[in-house]
Length: 186
Image (cartoon, rainbow, N blue to C red; front, side, top):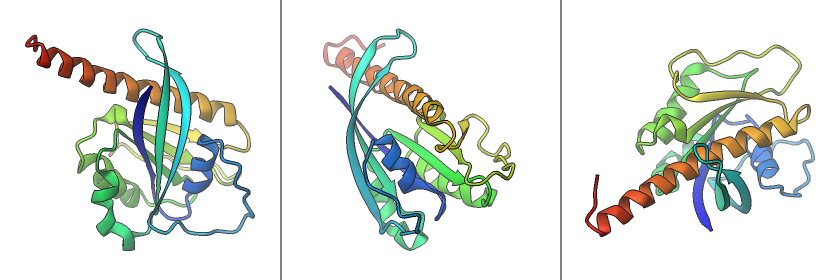
């Protein structure tokens, strides 16, 4: 079974923990009160997805690192990002500043050298007000608009497609390493 380390990050009060609990099918009840994550918390769960090119099903283990958006923990971020294979960058589309989201992108995707397909930008709709979207500073990253209360199946489908891209990339790296071991590098 393949394993991937994913990080969910974004500005404070954007709904990262609620979203992470949903993805992990956690039964943690929400009281509706805001409790900021202190540093990071890790959720582990299994999932299944299909590889994009072949449609081949893959069972996978996920380590989802729910990272605080509080910059007081910024000194810990290099340790948190170590070995990450994907980033879910979540923001509240009703209360965001583009520069702040771009900063998280640079800190969590750019600094560790992830490719655009290894990031999913999630505009978390928290109210009925028509939300804004991030302008093009992050142009090649897939962006989705979510409302877990209205369409959880859409969120699950998009997450599974993201997992498919992540595991396809992991498989490609493993294949290249195996070819290198037998002396057939391309």
